View 1 (cartoon, rainbow over the protein chains, first blue to last red):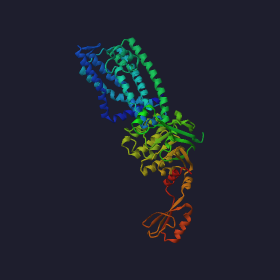
View 2: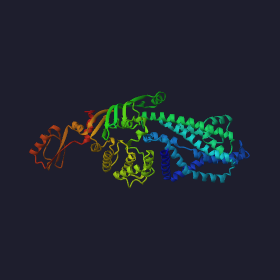
View 3: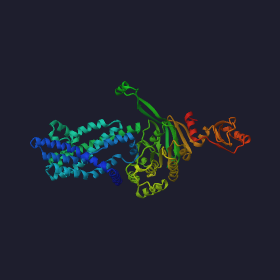
View 4: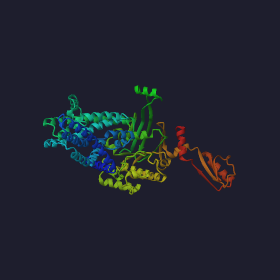
Length: 267
Length: 326
């Protein structure tokens, strides 16, 4: 176990050092991360203002709070592993990972977490600035904020496992961007990124509750905003854990057969 | 402990590739039904290697060298046949197996591009779970042998090709693997750097009693390091044995270089004249004739200097490939 801890620590340091080499890229990436929720934020506050200050149970201030917190939750659960794997398989750098006596997912998790540590202060700053500009309304519910912490961690794991599994498609398919695109579209609508899920028709909400997307973003987000009851929270945790279990099994199965496929064709 | 480090028996590897005719119609047909073809990359290779042995693995491009190395390193699953390295089945890629081997590919890098090599080394230390004292010791040794000291703290992307290769080799050997697979380790390097890497490999082999299987297009690498060579072509074994015996068998001719002072004499009666340049004549004669021709030349002509040489090893190996085996 101490060996694995050492590995995480070292990978963490390495990733940190590599990322700090490119300060400009880091800033540009941060701007991108802020821009997307900002666009939805502007759209919805305008819509809300023209509708007399509220749409589907969200006031203008609550929309602002939603998208600002969304930005932070999305940042904390975000991965880029799907682009990474395509590159690894195509360029054969996966071979080196396979020759190492440790599962490559550990490096990927450590790499992801380290990038978040670096960029999180920037995101907080951006959130603060948006807060001053858009005057969000928060309903601070202490127990819900406390519960949101593990919910974010579980959301991160779920998103990581799912996206890592999807990334493994690169073992069989040379051009994985079609798969990635469909995934991102589903993610956009069903995880609450375009709009709060309660604004969608009932049947979409039902689909969202069944599929994993909601549990990667919307659940911890709604929790942070104090919009869930204790019962809904418990159900949320149970669903997250269930999905993490399923995603983990999926990931293991795909990894095993993926490596076998890779070993058949070479890299 | 078994003395045998590597074992292969009737090893096969087939790749399935899709193929289609040129043109749009064929492309559309390909959407519905993929035409595939099996290409044998390795077609029944058998050889063993003792612990501590260095073997040169020769063959033209596409002969199946890299495929074989990848099967030995556990990256590729053989289609059929036996393969064992240090008593393990490579493709199972067990931790105990991976701890004992390394694969250096001259055209690919494992070092993180943006940071100094020393940081990648530290990462490898944690990946291989090396005790710090052991790691320091190995690092010191590698630093000394490869003269890495001035390179360790520079970002890898700022290093020259040769410098980077030295760091790649060091990164691959930090865990002191017992079996080392080297695929073109000196490709693209200048002569000095090639020589350095070469002498390092010899030194590593000696100090650690490591088994080394090496492919290279530079015959100088093979000549300097390997007594034994394995030659493959079209996935089949052409030759397995002493390099010197191979050379002897395939060296039908000797080259005689005679220095005469001028080019006025016609030496075609003595052998095939390869060149005549400022009074130095190069003759090719059958190996058996060498002694007779040499004494005749010395008796008949005002020879200033005379040397007898073997043809360059590249030429000999080329002949082995052309003739498809002894």
